[in-house]
Length: 161
Image (cartoon, rainbow, N blue to C red; front, side):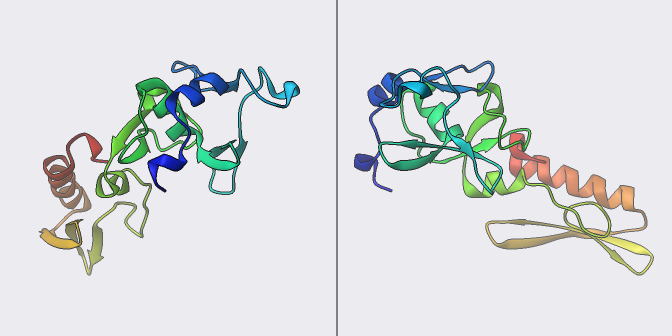
């Protein structure tokens, strides 16, 4: 969506109040007077709150970011704790798609991302920007998990799961 179609930051701040400590966005101006003082938006099927502003839907976490920081984010907004309804400022951060994908829940038969059971051993691998890297085959699950965690810290820093 082009920025010219988005409401200005001034418009957002005229319509809405964002509390960075609670993550709640409330209407302060609205053509429907019964909305004033109430939490803006509705929770959608994807488990995130969306707010209709000037006829268009926006994710609440993106609106919160824009109101607080004074600009629409150029990257995606990631929820550090993976709770799409927790829009406290300390839980929000700008992220690339690759960074954000590292913060998603994932479970397989071993219970660990990038770890596969191969006979009696465990294989560890990691992927970044479509490139897979084999980290080794280990006698124990703990060794494979440790190798994977070390690679995550190296590649993804603060976005490591």
